[in-house]
Image (cartoon, rainbow, N blue to C red; front, side, top):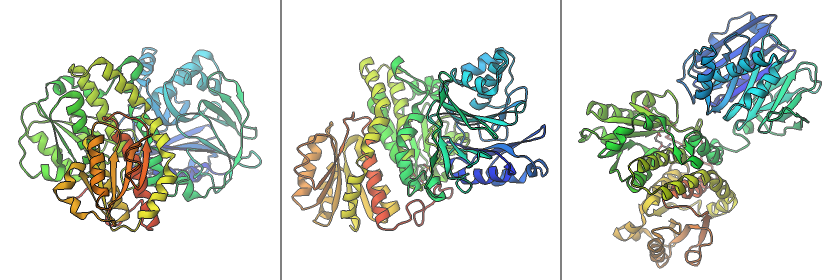
Length: 617
Ligand code: AGP
């Protein structure tokens, strides 16, 4: 997820764009850049780092005169965060300039085609390919920028929110959108226009905005009305201008009260972005570059060791079930902080998978270094492109969750499981230990996960009502079996870290080995009881709790009857396979902990004593 913004009007553009980028930094902050144009002079400044770093390199003159410009703050998806890969990008002629938020899936094939036609590329980004495709189309059709953008985008597969500028027609900016957000702020008298990923850069100047729909584009020219078109066929679209009622803080959080809630609701998009370009269900294909390039190592692996911390460690536990179940590869999961100090035995052929949202967790980084010293092949699963762990591992795969601002990991967990499920399925298929029929059905089911999460998010109100009943409980227990044992641990961690209520997760069968002594009428127990492999056993555990007057909040498959008569509350989830159930059962637990924390007036996004990235031991 990146932040894009632009301005064309009578004011000086640079300060407006820079302040807009500062307001969009929550969308991405590994590099930033700006282009301004004034009387034949076009200047691009860009740098690795934050907007504050960009401000230091701006030359004086043109930034005090130019009335048109575009700016970008990056969350890298293709290409390391560095000066060259920072946006804006220019076409080979230097005439066309682009900023882009999204992922062009077919950029490799487009790049090869353009290279054959003599185009050269400086960066590793998909965006530089796109601007040169637009230039190629513009040259071949001898057309204006708007038409060239429209034709070029019909050759693109992926997601985009773009703003494009042509120095030979400096009175206009062309924008287009598919899958990534893009808003146009308009002054009352059409004397100035603002472009942005959300309204935060322009809300102080105007409340009037057009939100482009998918596959829409617009040509913005000073002094004339905005002209909007459909990308598909260039047919004109009537602009719909709405008056915004949101304030700045609400806009940065996408209208949600907290980043955590926004990120919980982003999970359908985040899971989609994580499998986009990797899961080709109709063709029965899974492509994960870091695995494809090292497939022999993975097929020969006698053991996979997973090293992580916190929520990422819980994702590792889910991966243990996935790899052993679907790929028949022995797995052990280690807390990085323990693994790094216990002089572990690592044999030739062992593979270590390090999981980290931030890619900066000190214990996991140390575990990676130890594993490498002992000869292991180390594969990273990170959410931050170019992070230290991403650079330290021999290979890896990025989750495309976008920046996770809330300290409590939510979309990181579901996107980590998504990529790990893809890898487990890919290896199971390659090893011939999973039938074609089962493999194919898993691929289709994985594609349906975003929709199932969307469906489940509709129960938010009901979950909030349950939260109200138990918000003052001093303790919680979370129980799950099989794939949902790690989800029980994750649910307990979510509650602990944002509401400060003590909570523990257990394998449901462990109750009778001690924890059942804790149960009485004051103890709420979250029982994860989908109608899957362990259903009958979990129902028995629920009976045990019921007979001791525990309060039961059960996560059940929609249409469940048996648990409904036992539990105090049920939250129904859509039908899902055992293997992918963690992607679904975790959602109500995220919402439950969120609402309890809010009702307890806790600082949800920045809980006490915690940091988003634990870069110390
Ligand atoms: C999870 O909600 C916590 N924020 C924390 O446990 C986190 O998962 C852990 O610190 C690991 O962070 P990483 O994924 O960035 O390595």
